[in-house]
Length: 285
Image (cartoon, rainbow, N blue to C red; front, side, top):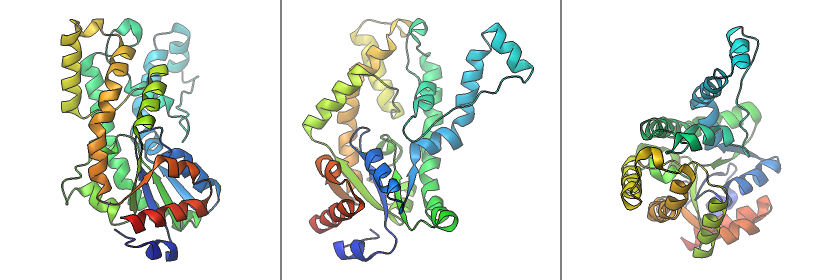
């Protein structure tokens, strides 16, 4: 770790951290707080994925839909219409919409083949965006004068690395340049995440073997064929399984860094409180 002790952290002129957790446990919230203080650069992996690596896929998907409408098709073909994705740190809907959900096309579902193709694109994009982190540390200081740096990861980071491999290229590069911080939730947090997700189900990235397993089990258990699956029902059904699947992977990643609780993150409402929280985590390690 680049900071072995609380003293190392507190005396560091440049503080560099990477936050990882299930979406909804405070990564972006605390990253926004640090950025708004004026002393921290906020690198959002999801934003990087949606703009640098999947932006063209996303916009092409918008254009594909527009081409089905005669008026919009005419405007597009005459270069009279400009279509772009308006992704922000707090609005990743264009990326989520592109990833989509498998199932009945009448309900907005994708064929499973197309869905897995987009999942593979996301895997490649997330790995590349993670590896860009190190370059952005130097870029943030060189261009903008930021010494402090927070990497706000995707909830699926644990799916694209192998924490049991000491030579995992992504984790090795990240741990050599930032302090990895797991925001650990409780059972109550997980129940709340499931409740929120059930209310507004969103697309998710799955490891390919895990996706195949839960998809085939869902078809078998419900006596369905691909085109009969309700897309929202499928991802609602699998979300709790996703949380359970990711938990041990997050825990293994935490061996590369430190652990804080979601309650502590919620209380870290100032950069000073955040510094103290990280120092305490280093002391407790």
